[in-house]
Amino acid sequence: MPGTPSSARGGEAGPDGPGLLHVLIDAATERPEYTDRLIRDELVTLLVAGHETTATTLTWLCLLLDQHPAAREQALAGGEGSAQRRQAIQALVHETLRLYPSAWILPRHAAEDDTLADYAVEAGTDILICPYLTHRDPELWPEPEHFDPGRFTTPDGRPAHPGAYFPFGIGPRACLGLQFALRESTVLLEHLLPVHTPAFHSTPTKAVYGITVRPDGPTPATLVPTLT
Image (cartoon, rainbow, N blue to C red; front, side, top):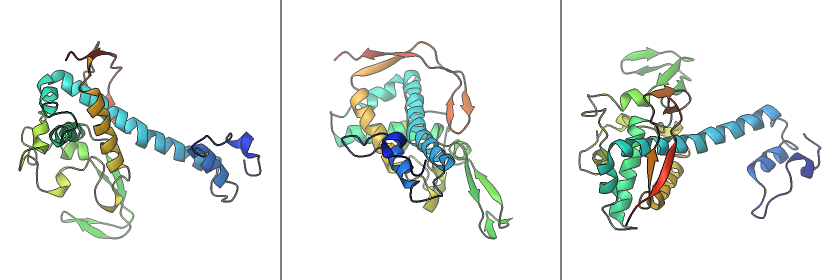
C-alpha cells in the first residue's frame, strides 16, 4: 500500500473531501503502524459502533412500540418540533437502551491494584461490566422488565445513582459517540414516527447476545403511512 498512487489506493476524493478509507490509506504512507490489519480493524469498529448499534436500537424500539402502541401516541402528543415531543422521543430511546443497551457487556482492564465494592482487584485483572443486567436489577428499577418511557420524563422516575444506567459505558472510558447516537436516533424518530408505523410480518421470540443485543431472527416489516 505505501508508495502506491492515490487513485489506485483509495480512489479520488469526493466533492466533500476524501472519504475515511482514503484518509486511512493515505496515513499509511507516513505512519508504518497503519498496516492493512489496523485499517481493516478501524473500519470494522466504525461500522459496528457507528451503524449496527444505532440500527439495532431503533429495531428494538420499533418492536417495543409494536407491543405498546400507546407509548407511540404519548410520544407524539406534543406538537411538531416542540420541546415536549423531543423529550418524549428521547425517553423512548433511553427506555429502549435500558432494556437493550448498545453494548450488553463492557470489558475493563485494571491497570493497577484497586478495591471495587470491597473486593480486591489486582493489577492486570480483566473485569466485565454488564449494563444489561444492571438495567434490569429490581433493586434499582421497579418492574424492570416493563417498558415504561415515563421513567425518563417524570421526576424521580429513574434511579439517582449514576451507575444505574450506562448503555454507553460510564466515566472517562464512556463511548465517544454517545451524544451523536442519541441525537441521530432522536432526529430520525422525529421524522419517521409521525408519518409511518412499521407493520411486522414476524417478530423475534428472544434476544441474541453477541457484540450487540439483537433479535434472534429477521424482523421483516412494511412501513404503513399514518393517517392524519
